[in-house]
Length: 104
Image: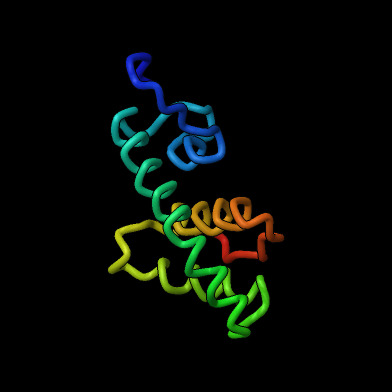
């Protein structure tokens, strides 16, 4: 990625933009911008996820799957792989077990 940028895109995210031989299929700046969007979304959703869980709306997996459904639609601006990554990251931030998500 860009060496002048101090943000390091984790391999789990950059993998979404790599082909089978490991080459990036999008410009590094695009990958960085998409990562920042997805990381910010995961962080922003932590409070909502905790509120849903603590108000008894669902168990951890149910909350995560519900949020996944909400961000998986075309209006979200995320592709399926990014939506899956956001939910995996959200589970990590909350220290919850990540549910089985649909294949991207």
